[in-house]
Image (cartoon, rainbow, N blue to C red; front, side, top):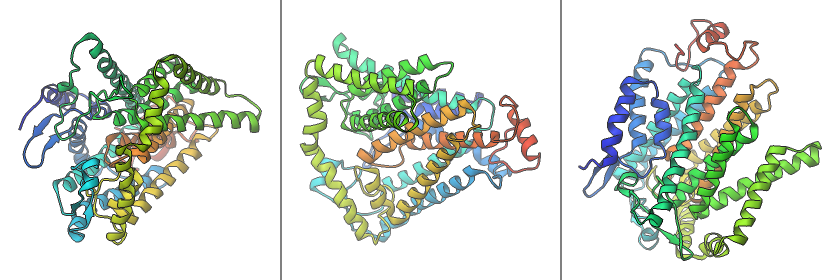
Amino acid sequence: MAIPLSGLILVPLTLGIFCFTSYLGEWAVFCAVLQGAALVNMSGGFAVALSPYFFVAALMVVRIIPRWAMGKVGFFAKEPVAMQVRILAIFTAWCVFSALVLPVLFEGVPVDDPRAGVDKSYYIQSSLHLTSSNLGQAGYMILNFAMIMYVVQLAIRPARLERLVGAFSWSGVFVAAVGALQIVCPHLGVPFPAWLFNSNQVWAQATNQHIAGDFSRMSATFVEPSEAAGFLAAWSVFELSLAISGGRHDGRHWLWAGVGSFMLIKTTSTTGYVTAGIMWIVMAWDCSKSILYRGWIKIKGSLAVLVLGGAALVALFTVPGAWLLLDAVLLNKGQSQSALHRTATFERAVGVFQNSWGLGVGLGSNRAMSVFFYVLSNLGFPGILLALILLAQLFSEIRTRINRPDIERTTRSLMAALGSAFVANLIALLTSGAEITQPRLWILWGLLLATIRKDWFLEGQGLPAGFPANARLVALHGRDSPLLVRAS
């Protein structure tokens, strides 16, 4: 067992936050971007490392279990988040059951071993059997569910939702700063401190990749450029949405949206470029639809679309080698050996689904480079069905609430920004998502549920927006009403 420098820094800091502050939720959101770092590395036949985020999530479990044991966990009868959390609990239970049982039930089925890597497994498939990967993925899902419960708990407390969202915003600033350091280091003749940001030995860290000749690929605090691109695409859309909605700090959000977009380009990731392109098209269509069907112009949204499109065109015609880079990322990349190996996992995932009678082979058993085929092959038809129900219910609730005329402006802005980031992250996962336990997906999901829950408490009650949360709960529902977690 080895404790890297990142562990020596983060373990005491995390324990201090846990013991002496109320910022554990915010710290979990921030730690989610430290994907390449480890607190502890354990070598051997099956390498294991303790991730900063999952360590914080485990501490959340320590905090929330006593409250559950004391009967402080419950739901209001008509609370919209209640059904979503119940289905999420069923989905988590199926993930855990599948990870522990299905590899034994379908032992011997050919699978793409997640630990082998997509290129190696293309040539040599493995025989299915229960491994530590199954146990680890099951544990991660439990911790992600606990994190969602913890975040939803904080939603009804004064200013806590804003603090959680602020933690997500500043985590992106941190990623951009580390990415800038990675870009600058070679020009200064000093090595990038990968020993600090990329200390997790479980991952094959890709911190010095190049593409199209001299273009270096930025990965920042993540293990590879595509992971950094997935985060930056979601974060940039989040910041841009807040900037368009306006507010007290809209200048800061415009700046961060621009920084995130630049850093996204520096990842030179197909996943990031495709995600950003789809989101730009959606924004352009929304602005055009507003003009065609409503007769008025969304000034800030249109300005954002024009600036982003114009900046991309200027860069293509002024930056040396820009066309070669675009060709390498979007055109030649599709014909590369890596793309061939990745797309081959789709057809194999369908075969795994068929060979397991539609039940899947268990969470963490088969690598498929798209979240749809990952869920299909690992969680089978039950997993696909539950996921579709969850997404349909979530988007339906968001659409209903965001169009409500009496919704608070701040709540609408947060819901729109988090929803946009969630969609961008989902697109990235559909493009190249190899697993579903990544923290970013569940953090955005939890923040969305927290926003919905807070809006439900404020909905149509005629109480002023600044009314204290504890007093509001008593005024609206009485002192004896059960809460998901009491606000006191």
